[in-house]
Structure formats: C-alpha cells, structure tokens
Amino acid sequence: MREDVYDAGARLAAWLEDLGLADQLAAAGLPTFERDLGGVARWTDPATGAPLSAGRLADLDRVLHQDGEDPAHAVPLALVQLRRQARVRTTLLASPTHTYASLAAVRDASENATRFAVHKAAERGALLVVPHEGGVLVPAFQLDAAGELRAELGAVLSPLLAARMDPWAVWSWLTQPAGLLGGAVPHEAVRDPEEAAVVRHAAVRLAERARA
Image (cartoon, rainbow, N blue to C red; front, top):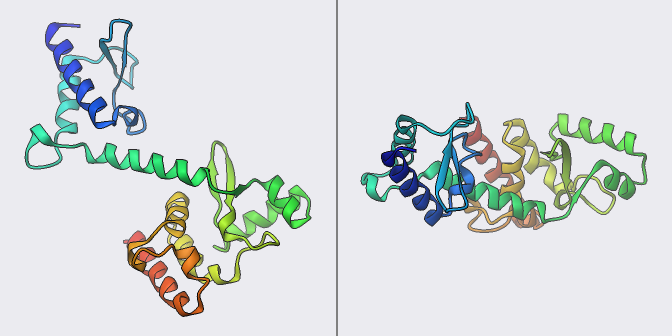
C-alpha cells in the first residue's frame, strides 16, 4: 500500500472498530478489511478481491461519513441498522421455532403433509414462515398446542403478510415491545379480548406503512 492509502485505511478501520460496525461491511456490500499479523488493516474490493485502491477507499470514506451535518462525527446509519437487524435476528433465532419435521411431530402428521399444509397456509397469509439458511422456520409463538395458528392471531398476521413485509420484520414486530401499542408485545396483547382490536388496528397501520 502507498502511505496515503495505508493511513486512510488504518484510520477508517479503527473508526469502524470503535463503533462496533466492522462486521457489517460485507452485509452492506461494501469493501471489507482484515488485519494482518502486524495489525495492519488490509482493505479488499468485494467486486474483484483485489486490494482497495486509494480512490475507492476515499469513496468509501465519503459514503460512511455522509450521514449527519458534521462529517467528523457522522455515524454510518445503514451499518448501524444492519447491526441492529443482526442482533434482533440472533434474539429471534434463540426463541422456539419449528422445522417441518418438528412441527409434523406436534401435529401428529407426516412431514410431507406438514410441508404441504405449511406452504398453503403461508400462501393465504395464515402462517408466518421465515426463510433461514436455505430452509424455513416456523416461529412457535404463533401456534397453539396442536401446532395450528392461534385463532386470535389470524386477523393480526393476515394484513402484515398481505403487505409482503419481510418475514423477519413481521416476526420481530409481533414478539417485541411495539411503539404503536405503548410498549406491549403484540402477540401477547392480542390474547386479551379488551386489547385485541387495538392490536389488529396497529397491524393494519403497520401494513399500510409497509405498502407505502
């Protein structure tokens, strides 16, 4: 590396590490870096796999510092959002879920029959199915003891899925405190007949935002 590239790369890498955002670069499709045995940050162009040029490094610096009125204190909001999404997904994946096989066992049905039923239910917006690592997961919070969709959740889930929201976002909204509900967790609040209409209304409003 030329000296100016070395200095710029070192400064940018240290800044991202201090913010805890270095691991989000690849997910954002941006150039990434690895530190060699001497601790030097080696930046790589994701398109070619070659060392990042001075011009590309300068472009990256500008992009990452474009949020906020003061570039010196800017925070790359897109990377912050990706980090939050990654943390939320980790939390969601730690909660109970089903594969086709485990759901088949709950339903006392064959795996093939369960797979077919799950796909049909997902198509009509009657079951949340989340893609993950080449397969799918069925979050267990939405199911009753027989492995079927909880009756009170149907009218909440339907508008969200009809709006083609990201299944991960639907999962997250239903299982975490929601601002539209004053901090209540939607899938829990809807169990209360006095709160069910409010939860359904919040789901419709969220679906409208997603469509917009």
